[in-house]
Length: 348
Ligand code: KG4
Ligand code: ZN
Image (cartoon, rainbow, N blue to C red; front, top):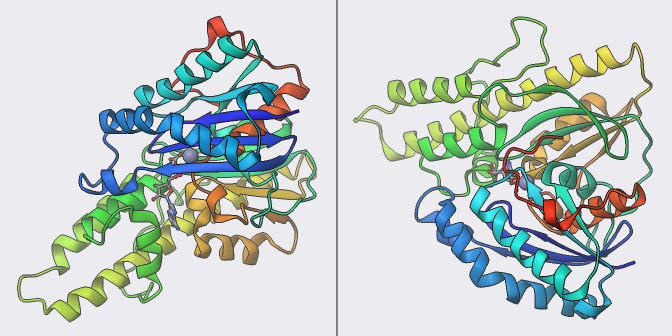
């Protein structure tokens, strides 16, 4: 069974061809260079770029899998969460294909897709992994920070989430404050490598009381106040450069520590009722090596830690949507094309 999937949830136009858990081709047209000028994603530009690129990326994905549209058995598309007018482009295109080829369609939750990015395999590094239910997934992206209990395919319970900013969003905002470039997350991670994480200790939010709720807005504000205090006019460029690295390292430490502490609490609570063996780290921020390393260090002895080994699969891509669609198909969870509408706030 061949599935063609589209994801246009944010600033990447992506189309894939998948078969079961196997990603055969996964093409991504990134808009980063365009949004860079604005320091963030501009939804109207994102939509226009999706519209301009979608047909090219579809062709590319089909060519990569050596198939044509008539070979596709099921069409799949991201329904949400994401940018409303961007989601619309992928949905419109899939509706066109479904009507033309009279094939079934599956609407996929983008965050469910991120989970399957760790459970799918391809030729570029994602191996087949062993996993069992229930498992715990930490979803960390530009819009989400969630600890999710996955009891089975399609059965989710959110056990902790951010009350304000997402962790990826905080990385991006802090990077903007430090004027280190766009996209903020990966650049901040690089810069933090040259920094001293203990020079400017920052608070770890939401840790005074035992709660699974998270928060990143206070940490971001703490960085803002710190920069206002220490970036004085008489600062030498070399000193400032070092300070930026030190702040980046401190921010990253607090950001990751919060995720570790919350994951520990959730695992502790779950251990009363469940035997968890697997932890999934997924979403754009799961590309962060410091985060992966601390999860391995803290939980690696007791749990199998999964994250996308192929870097392309940590960010937004349609391959993960195709694999998530396959698991929906196994449960007969098809979507009536008449009801297929974007849902920018779709939850797991
Ligand atoms: O999943 P994703 O590609 O898009 C959304 O669904 O939001 O996640 C994008 C987020 C951005 O905030 C980006 O800065 C962050 O993931 N990100 C990172 C890294 N790579 C991407 N954050 C920290 N370290 C990274 N290496
Ligand atoms: Zn995403």
